[in-house]
Image 1: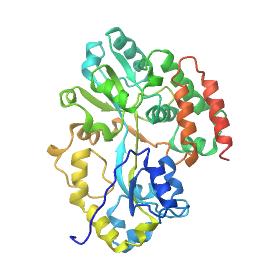
Image 2: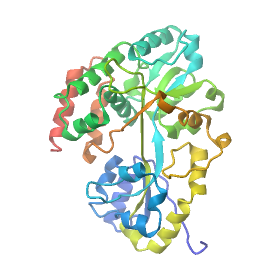
Image 3: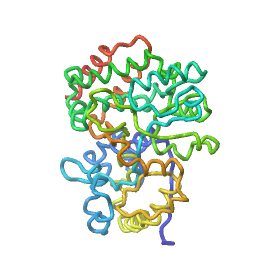
Image 4: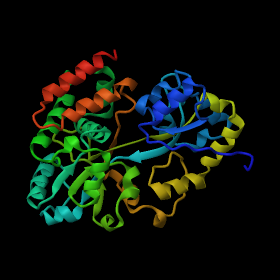
Length: 367
């Protein structure tokens, strides 16, 4: 398509919503936006007129049957609108540095919380940090949600975050108490409340910490010299868990392709671009390079070209149970409150009661 010119602007995910919304007010929003759903307020883009329903285009352009049903479902609103074309699926496992674990006398990946605590004690004794968490930003919030899911089914997890009745739910309360227990048992790296995504990754990749919770988007960042030592798996089970095996959050919310109000004015060019983007060979190349989970039903990739960590993930089978992330359940304006409150949970001395009370109070304003 030599008649089509692409003008590309790249921003951090956290900056994209304000960039798009500010440009929209000036009538200058980009034609297409590649962004998470519904993080950062993007869940309000369609009702606010910033973007348009792509359901008609899925049908008109002959793309609907190419996508996995679950991928489309996760981008579909209660009104049956499809907010964006799903692009980047993900898994969000626990990373284990087996070299450190074995040096500390831990021969197997912990499969229960009690084993995790015992392993952490040995890891500290060997001179390493056990489990590094980016407690000051969204990575700490995401791990907080992993802990929530240890005691709850996806349905119960979703109901709690929609209703905001945190203290009233016994399983949610137990999950917060578990996080506090892990913190006080020394499972988390020192000063985790001050770490973020970048410093968390750095500590693990530099071989200073034995475990972390990081998404598949970080597979390509793992140093080659570390790859042979890294195993990815689920978070250990608690007694009474509703899950059959260690849990891994997953979904297709990682990135979607949104058509804006301005994009509709160039819909013929947009159609050509989107059809080109979603050709199987192009999505396959993304899978091979980035280790993302494809939103398409058909994926033809050469395992030899795939990232070793991604290969591990596609061979999990029933050794893990996939669970929901919080994204589809949380009020769009509540992200800042959730991150702020969950950050407190990593600060020594903060009680489970305070976390529950603060969450209850925060959600009252969204009812």
